[in-house]
Image (cartoon, rainbow, N blue to C red; front, side):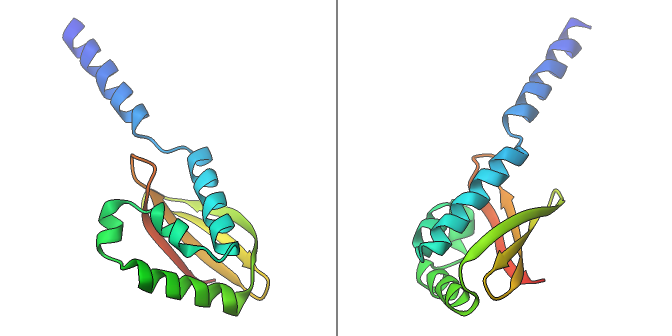
Length: 119
């Protein structure tokens, strides 16, 4: 009985230590918006997990993000519209359009999924 109780406590602590909070996501989205509005996508790329980076080249990502901001203008707001285990979805308002930002954080609070799509 004592062992199962201790095991339950250990599992709960493990789960809580690796859970990303809504605040963690809001903070990361705020950073992404700041860097994109500064036309500095390289700093956004630095927020990615190593696994995510291994599938995307920094130069290509930067070129796509610069073109996105040049075409759509600065980002004024981002509103969380859906929380899922696969990704949090934000409605992002640019000067000239609305887009959907999909974002997932790793246990280390690095971005492990990122895309900006038509809304």
